[in-house]
Amino acid sequence: MIPIDLSGKTALITGATGQLGRVMARTLAQAGADVAIHYHGNEVKAAGLKAEIEALGRACVTVQADVTDFQSVQLMRDQALSALGKIDIVVANAVIQYEWTSILEQPLEDYRSQFESCVLQSVHLAKVFAPGMISRGHGRFIGINTECAMQNFPGQSAYTAGKRGMDGIYRVLAKEIGEHGITVNQVAPGWTISERDRESSSEIQEDYSRHVPLKRRGTDQEIANTVLFLASDLASFITGAYIPVSGGNVMPTI
View (cartoon, rainbow, N blue to C red):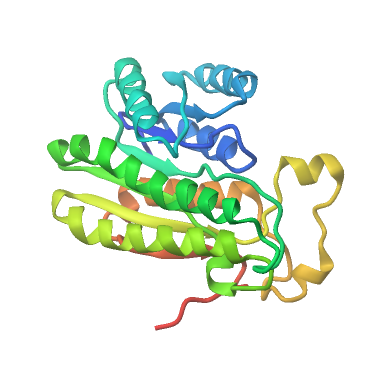
């Protein structure tokens, strides 16, 4: 048996109150990590998640921030470090939601919001958390991307553009800070089953699943498991990777 043990590590998850983020936070805590829960507006959900993590015996803090604003991210860092001492693992999960439509109909503001919440968030997090990781000679950046970045389907333009921009930042960052023992990777979920689906009984989506080699949708726990792996020492020689967790719905080529 090879356990994944994050004891002594601290993790920050942006968008931790979201459908996928909350499962990531719980999973990293279950593996032994202390956790900083970032939220933008859902303070009540953040407080509830904090109570869950503390019940596991882990240290936890909630931190409010606008990830598109550099000063706000700096303040988030200061609050997280004050409470937890250090941040070893940064999971960039937050993203601005919007209504998808065609390029000709998509408001320009949606392209700005995706650039800011995908690309600029990644830059902000690197600038404020990488120096501490460099000084300790260890760290993990894990960006939550999407299968849409490979699909390029109609209606996905703003989201795809933002996530493909994020991909560029992460690949360059992996090359720039790898010498300091820091890995930089991306997890790319497919259309994932989350608590929202379970509550509405919408887990089965046959039109989607019939195109997936594994013939089903993935789950929020399966996304969190991949994040856990990349955060652990088992993934110590993996960096610069874009890893779809989509049942084979998209397959990066060589």
